Length: 158
Image (cartoon, rainbow, N blue to C red; front, side, top):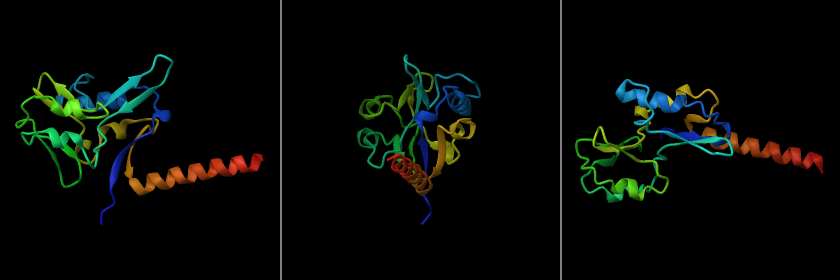
């Protein structure tokens, strides 16, 4: 079985540089304009930012409400938009629990992350590692080791 890769978001690492947004927006439009980006940075007035994009949910509510078949799950697990089939009803926007689907006025269709066909531009330009396209097992192992180190350090203090 092929290892499953996911776009992992690490908000604490985000420096708010907007490289991910600009790289994404230039993919289809050959222009560095944030509006059509499929990844967004949410900035907080107290400081900090969080990158957000489609999580490619296993039980994606957007798939269940799309009556035209414009949204479908591909063999690699990515939920993709077929712009020709999209009628612009925006039902998928309404049901996404994370707000990670948008509507393109220019394209007259829903837009969402499709992981750039398996090589997400956002992750390739992220200087801080806030966005990483990695195998799930590698990320779990990394987090487990970091947690174990924090427990060990706490135990050494007692």
